[in-house]
Length: 248
Image (cartoon, rainbow, N blue to C red; front, top):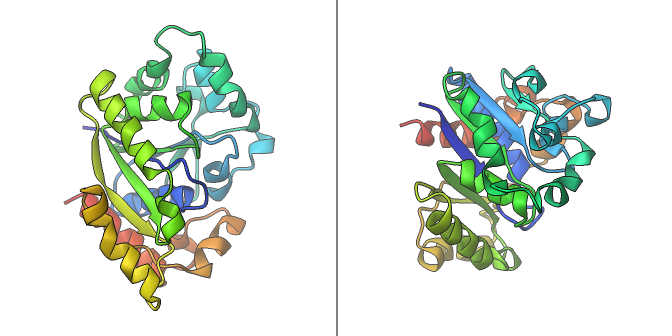
């Protein structure tokens, strides 16, 4: 059965896209078929997987307009398929604002892939707008990347409230698979203290942290995951371990 995973946090710069791209590549490396759905108008997941959004005639915005997603899928060198985004996705909230059943447009569009992919991973935008609600309504589970710095806690409570509302109103099956500490520097007492605080503060499983590394910044320039550009790196090993933990 296809598992639909949303990676969400309305705060930017917490490695959501990095997590989506590298987790997807690690799952593909383990023999899973994976579709990444880029739900951010900045199209960073699309670009990071080697596709220039400016070269695309169509993208995920067309799904919200009513086009079938099947013809929009792009294949990538990392063995991951992607439903790409373009800058026009910025108008999606306005497009859906008056549409009946607007929370379920993405869920209904992804039903056609239930027998095609083992995993569908949703890269959410840094907001709690209608598109993020669509992602949470479509997902079976959500991972929350959280930078190991005090200011990254700001707003997470609002995300938790949104998840709770989605569970109560539109998707009672949605579960939080865990908080993923990112940009972690274990040499600092501050990062270690933030990491130790996550479980007691939020009451969810804390996944193994992803270390800060320049390798993550270098990989998108090549249009590949860190598993391809730096396969022996610590970061690649950490995302492989995350993929293994999710497939146990």
